[in-house]
Amino acid sequence: MLGLIQRVKKASVTVNEEITGEIQQGILLLLGIQKNDTEETANKLIDKILAYRIFSDENNKMNCNVQQIDGGVLVVSQFTLAADTKKGLRPSFSSAAPPAQAEALYDYFVAQMRSKHSQVATGIFAADMQVSLVNDGPVTFMLEME
Image (tube, rainbow, N blue to C red):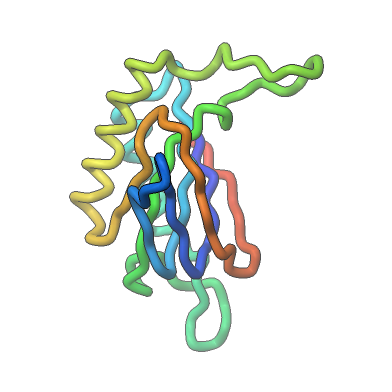
């Protein structure tokens, strides 16, 4: 499971000109689900995201996590993160989970994230989404769970 996290001042996702999810300060998570991912993989990534210290403390050091700053998490499914780009000029998506498997795991991920954190917003799985954000820093990390 792949999670591209970005520290943001604010972020939103729009589908058909309607905002489906938005947060103020927090984390924008672009979530890529691969064939071998499981609920256990999802739980590990959730725990890491919620504990990952990417927000500044009183000494301007990255020592605080999203829960400590009472920030939001915006979860956006993004199967293109699972692309193999090593060869050729067109990405291969052979490692991405099939849509039904990915959607079930995405729904599980969001439900578990919501059970552990109070401010969680989402896009719509497999929709054509427009994501807007104000990246804070910029601070961006790729997290990978196996």
